[in-house]
Structures are given as structure tokens and as C-alpha cells.
Image 1 (cartoon, one colour):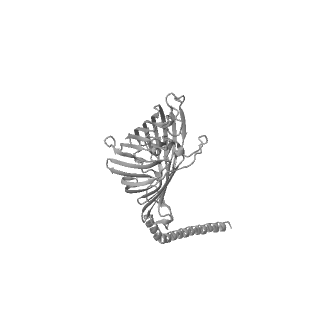
Image 2 (image 1 turned 90 degrees about the horizontal axis):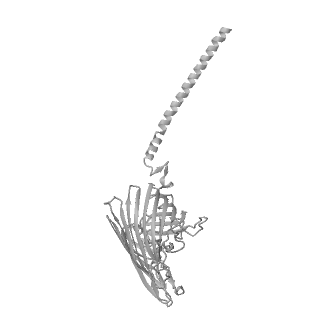
Image 3 (image 1 turned 180 degrees about the vertical axis):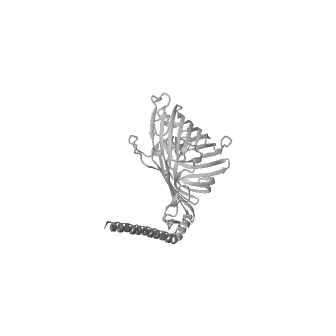
Length: 432
């Protein structure tokens, strides 16, 4: 009995082992079979996928590209289904730190008219402020049309009215314009102004004679590439003016301001000449006046390849409001008999930028501004001054810029009183 058990027990294990071996062989063979079949069946699919991967502009996962967001037609732009053109969302976050050795009244931006005059009891009182009000957000949309390329540009900043204790400032409209072919409609910087001649600065009030007015208007521009290149143009702008004296005799504007400009660009830089014609009114008299603005940039590669010299000069009458509202001053004064006297203007800035390295540069600025105010003006009204500026800017990465700046200002009033102020500024800008 024992021998019988041992014989058949051993035989059972042999049969079991045989079945196990056969099962392994069967499943391995079945797996190899399916691998071969899968290889044969999927070869065209994989070939098609490989072909598709080399032409991603046509297909993404088997779907046409118009079903997905794509790169747009200009730098940083995107295109989405259902929109014929491309758009870009951009701007920057700006943090400004200011320190005044003399109380300038307005902490966020340097304002020369508020610098204390010599002998003022507030002279020598320093002040410190940090703010992010210069942060900017914009939307840029472009598309081709039958009458030429169209561009819509809208931009806001955070410099509207608000509470300096809770820092809840209002959003403020800066630009809202449309370019269609050779025509420009909407609000942008005045055609009398040359933004490209203004130097890099931590303070939007630098240089002192830099005009920054944003104007609603209609312009025709021929030539050039966008706002650069050799071009010329003309247009009309909003005619608002600010006068003093007998304000009961102020009369509303009856015609727009007229602007014309021409820009010549060459390898050495560019020159731009602009003219302004406007009307000042009282209930008994209308006068017509205006001004000339010459500006430009000269490249100076004999020092370093990227060094440059920028400049701007303006003279005329009655367009003080084309400067920042923080500059102060009136376009004119109305006497009691209704006579209108326009304020004379002379301003200029000269700015040299030197590049210390690929990411490090400095700008040295000199600017002056003079107002020839009518005799009826307030004796203590701001009549001009000078500003000397030096700064240092550094870009550790393409999307961030840090700058340090020192501004020394002198001011003078209509009666000859004067004063001076010193401001140190730091700015960090983070672009998106």
C-alpha cells in the first residue's frame, strides 16, 4: 500500500508539473501571438501618428488646429477658435519706494511745484512712501481687414482716486484706441508728444520738460512701422484748456486742437518735428496760439554699442496742460475786461544713456522748464525750474527690472522766490 501511494503520488506531481509547463507555454505563445497581431495592426496607426507629430500645425491628437489655442501673429499673442485675429494680455506690476529730504507734498510722484520755498517752515522735513499705483494692465488685439490691419489697444493703471491709508485706489483709463490702416481713433498720447524721446526713469515726472498728456483724437498717419520709422501725420485732439483770472468770463471750447508731425529715421537715430495749433477763449475774445516740439534720439556707438542720446525741446504759448497736471501752471489768464493772455512756455531735456553691461545701464538727465506767466497770475504760482537726474537700472531676468534714481530739483515762482528738493527713488517692475 505504501509503495502504491508513493508510485501514484510521484506520478501525480509529474502530471501536475506537465500541466503547469503546458499552461506557461500556452499563455506565452498566446501573448507572442497577440503582440505580433498588435504590431501588424497598429503599424499604420503608429506611422500616421509619427507623420502627424512632424506636422503639429495640422493636427493635434487627430483634431484640426482651429480647435485649440495657438500662437498668435505677433510676439506674445495667442489665437483662439472663433476669433479672426490674435490678442495679447500684458502690463507690469510696479513697486515704487520714495524718500524726500524736503517735503514735496505729494508722496507717490515727485511734484516740483510742491517743493517748499526757501524760508518755509516745512523746509527740511523729510518723508517716505511705498506704493504700487503705477501698476499697468493692457489688452492688445490685432487682425487683418480688407482696408488694412486693425489694432485695438486698451490700457489701465491704478493711479485713480483712492484712500492712501487703505490703499484702495481706483482703476484709471490710460489708453483706448483703434488703428485701422492709416487712421487712428481714440485716446492715446497726444500726437504732439514723442514718447520715444523720453528716457528710462523711476519717476514718471522725469524729465521735467517731458510732456505726457493722453488725448482723445483722430489722426491720419502715413509711412513708418507702427509708431516708429519715417512717417508723417496730422489730426485733431480734445481742446480742453485751463485758465485763471476772472473765471466767470470763461467760454467753452469751439474748435479742436490741430496737430501735425513728421518723423525722419536713419541709421544714426531719428528726428521728429511736431506742431500744435489751438484756441483760448473768453466771452469777449478768442485768441489762437500753439507751439513747436523738436525731439529725437542719436545713437552713440563710439562709446558702447547701445549708448544713446535723447532730447526734446518745446516752445510756444497756451499748452501748459500738455504737461503732467503735477507740473502746475495755467494755459492763460482772463482779465476783468475779458482779455486773454496766454502763458509762454519754454522747456527742454537732454538725456544720455550708458550701458555698463548687457543688463546694467545708467541715464544722466538734465531738464528745465520755464513759464512766462501773465502779469495777472498769482505771484506764488509755479514758473519753472531745473531737474538733474541720475539712475541705475538692472535686469537680472528679461521679465524684471530694478532701478535706483536720484532727482535734484530747483523751483521758482512768478515773484522770483525759489526752493530746492532732493528725492531718492527705487522701483521694481515685473512684466507679464
